[in-house]
Length: 255
Image (cartoon, rainbow, N blue to C red; front, top):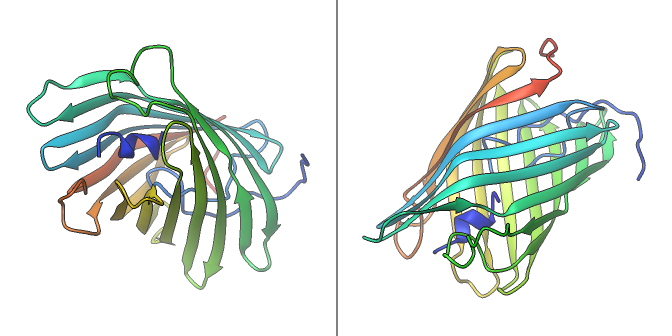
């Protein structure tokens, strides 16, 4: 969902502490972190992608993660989409189901380095969203790797992946998030994220900045805003964003 919607129209359980990471909602780049054994991380957000004469919005985007052991995460994500193109009336429908399994297979606290893989399958629902041009026509399989590294006061997260697409061209994703904890409650970050196809059609590179603010367990405020790195023409967005809340369950004091 986090990738496909933006392109429409344009086992080993090893005990270890969760990796410190700044990626994940409200950002497009994912980090190697997992919720922890039998813990839930639920993200609810409003996500606009605004273009000249068109728009795609997730109203809301629902991202549910569950920890199995300390290094495994099961993920389900979907959204209610509003798609408008030109002067035509807006179309509404359910997005693609995204089903994923993240495995943080490397975690070195001394070096501050964590690495994970996070395959994700996106499939259409039987609600005719694809036929109405709301979602891509076929399924896709995203095969990314995520990395996190502590460099002085800065947390560095990056992600690269290959997207295998049925009924469409294969593509890629690449993201980088730099973050810093200003206080125990406030984290600020900057992100570069790119996605597209190897045919160089509908490629999008965006720059954004955002924050996470720990309100009170289990609530964390998530905010992000940005735009395309290129001028907002030829299918490039002049605004992208995420405005939402993260819930960590069961509730416990923030670390």
